[in-house]
Each structure stands twice: as structure tokens, then as C-alpha cells.
Amino acid sequence: MATESSRTPHGIALVTGATSGIGAEFARQLAKQSYDLVLVARDRPRLETVAAQLREHTHVAVEVIAADLTDAAQRDVVERRLKSEADPITFLVNNAGYGLPQEFSLNSADDEARMLEILATVPLRLSHAVLGGMLSRGTGTVLTVASLAGEAPLGTYAAAKAWAMNFSRWANAHYRSRGVTFTALAPGFVRTEFHSRLGVARASMAPKWMWLDANFVVRSALRSAAHGRAVSIPSVRYRLLWMFMKLAQPLIAVFVARTSRRTATVADKRHDS
Ligand SMILES: NC(=O)c1ccc[n+]([C@@H]2O[C@H](COP(=O)([O-])OP(=O)(O)OC[C@H]3O[C@@H](n4cnc5c(N)ncnc54)[C@H](OP(=O)(O)O)[C@@H]3O)[C@@H](O)[C@H]2O)c1
Figure 1 (cartoon, rainbow, N blue to C red):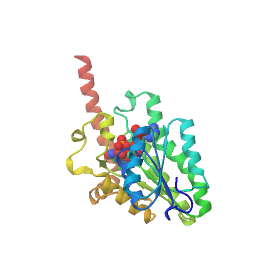
Figure 2: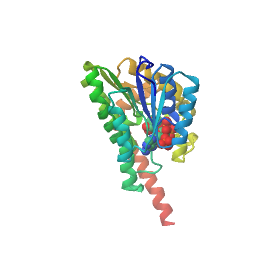
Figure 3: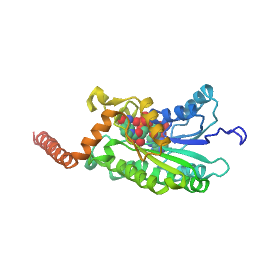
Figure 4: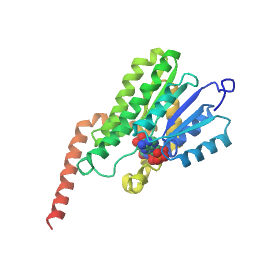
């Protein structure tokens, strides 16, 4: 850990889900901006590898906390780190998350509740843990990785991401005048491990033009956060899509109803034969 005298001017950023994809990229870009880091994820060997690479290529101090954030006792270690006044966290990135491969009725209620916890309850608890110190110091940034899906009725993953979008919009309006900004990052499809963890091939999910690189997404998000924006939507093509989604909101529900009826009919026929 860096000593007070060696502490970089930006302070310390805590990034959840820092072992891969968007989280690992946040760690790299924040290190380049001279933030010291606290990296959180479940896989300790992988965390140590990411930390070693960052120490080798930058001059920042890197701590790791191996924790499953859906486990209350393990999450408590992270919450306590966020409340530390001796080594205060100045930038929180709520990034850890995953989706479920099946739709609501086919998943167990426990799996659904765990996904809702990692996508909504965990950012709520971590934001709450860090906020008191940030408000008393009159400065701080909380960036939560949501999703463009959170702006549409597209399943329980999208519903959980809607929480992050609206929480960030409200919190940014409410706390910004006291020096603490909240930003929701709302990306579309990003090339990470997210889809392989779901067991789904990228090509089957979306056409090539819809895929973004984590590097670009994170650069764009950090710019939005630096400007104190409540929402960051990387790339012009996704900003246009977002405007279309807003206009077509009622049509999305009709589209979902139609495709669900078709899927149900095919499933019924398979069941009957
Ligand atoms: N990729 C996309 O297209 C996309 C689009 C919109 C939004 N997002 C969001 O972006 C965020 C990052 O996902 P990604 O695309 O970068 O996927 P990823 O490469 O699979 O990374 C997910 C990260 O979350 C960590 N994680 C998962 N469950 C955890 C838990 N219970 N406790 C602690 N850490 C946990 C994983 O580390 P360990 O396995 O080591 O714990 C990993 O570091 C997620 O919130 C996701 O919903 C992704």
C-alpha cells in the first residue's frame, strides 16, 4: 500500500469485477491516470496477476480483495475498505456483474435473486458505504456499469440494470452540488468474457457493427464521469439507438410479446411431437 506521502494526487479507485473485461480495463485506464487501486473479484490468482501487471507497467499502488460480493461476510470486507478514513477511496467503479443464460421462468428464484443482488443490491451497498466519507471530504466519483438494456423492458437483467440507471440519475442530481458525482455507464454489446460465461457465441447475439471494445467504452465513461454526467452512452451509433428506444418504448413491449408467443408456440409443438 502506498504511504500518505507517496499517495498520488487523484487518490484511490476501487474497481469491482477487475479480473476481466470492462473492469480490468477500468483498472488499467485509472492506473494510467495515476489513481492507486483496490481491485475486487472472486478469483484471487487472477486478481494477483492483474495487480502484478499494473505494478509492472505503472507506478501506482495496487491492493487486492478477493471477495464474492453476493456473500454478505465477504462483501463486508469491501464495505469496510470503502469506509476507511485513513486511506480514503475517491473513485468507486461498481462493475462486477453477469447475466443468466435462460429467461425468468426457467431460472431458479435463487439464481434470479443472486443476479439482482450483484447488479443492484451490491452497487447500492457499496455506494452507500463510500458516500459518507466522500460527502464529508466534499469530493468523490461513483461510476456504475449499467447497460443500454436498462432503458427497455427486456427481461430481468435489463430490469436490474434499470435500477443502476435511475439510481445514478437521481444521485447525481442530488449529491453533485456537494462534490460527489454519480455516472451510469450504459454500453451496448462489448467484447468481454460476459457472453462466453453465458455460454453464448457472440455472433449469435448481435451483428458485428454492434460490438464495441472495452478500451473505447471505458475511455468514454471516464470522460463522462470527469464531466459529472449522470449517464454515459459510448458511441454515436448507440446514442442514436438509445433515442430510437426512447421513442419506440411501447413498440418494444409489443415486439417482446410477439416473439415470446412465437417461441412459446415452437416450444409447445416440440413438446407435443
Ligand atoms: N459485455 C457486455 O456486452 C456488457 C454490456 C452491458 C453491460 N455490461 C456489464 O458490464 C459489467 C462487466 O461485465 P463484462 O462485460 O466486463 O464481463 P466479464 O468479462 O465477465 O467480467 C465480469 C467481472 O465481474 C466479476 N464478478 C462476477 N460476479 C462476481 C461476484 N459475485 N463477486 C465479485 N466479482 C464478480 C468477475 O470476476 P470473477 O469471476 O473473478 O469474480 C469479472 O471480473 C457487468 O456489470 C455487465 O453486466 C456488459
